[in-house]
Length: 342
Image 1: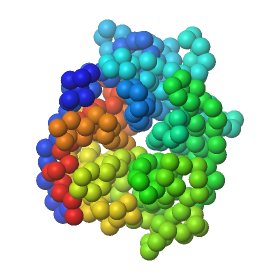
Image 2: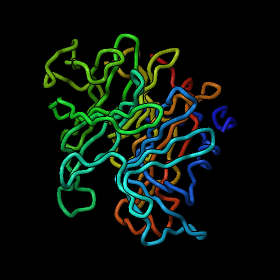
Image 3: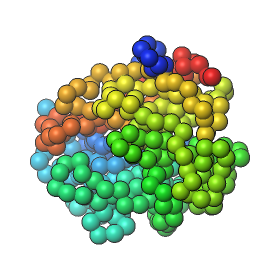
């Protein structure tokens, strides 16, 4: 893994230098011994050389030599994978023969999908979004709330899961740790448009008192929040670079866009400038969607960010059994200098 670690769109966008990362794409092409496919693909460095990866719906078990999955392949709603060098270790609840989601449901009929994580005071804090099935339709999920799970270090056992007492219709996810505050970026879906909002917590205290950007300043009232950007993914990443902030998202100004784009700003509340197109996912098409990118800054090499995005079939779950390669993340290297700061 040493080799791997060493390893915009205005009116008419022009692509800038981005290329697949062969090391990480190879590392996460798994055929057995734990996780073999999933989405989410969030990561947090643990401070001891290891990285914790967080996944949503995940296939376990094995992949056949012909690239298919057995029909009885276990599928759990979430799991964690611990990376130590080039060794990946999958963690779930339950047993080897009957695995369960690592993060348990918080109410009957619900499940949890991880949204982001950070390390604070000797523990990992993971933002969890709670969902339930709204109807038998494939993609009809209903978000029911948000919680924060505390994992002790170094064992990564769940210590507690705390409901997040913020009720303003915004799904907060991406975390940005700064000296003055911990910033949280969230998404509100309004008439089919995804709007980004910003909140902040005290530095190093995700469960402390939050304030919300209201368009002019920071308010203690959650419902005073105002959007600062539109057209983002449900999941995206924000990173602090030497010349300002960078946000990487799919270009959700267009439904099911395959374009990975970047926005730049000098402050979390903006103004955000862009977007600049980074890459078009070549796997995406009428039946395959690319979605929910994440940045993994601990693996930055030669100034190039490691970015992942997820793939899934839009209408046929059985396709993920016929072709295990569909449902796993893809990794690319992004040169943020190609999208200059404002």
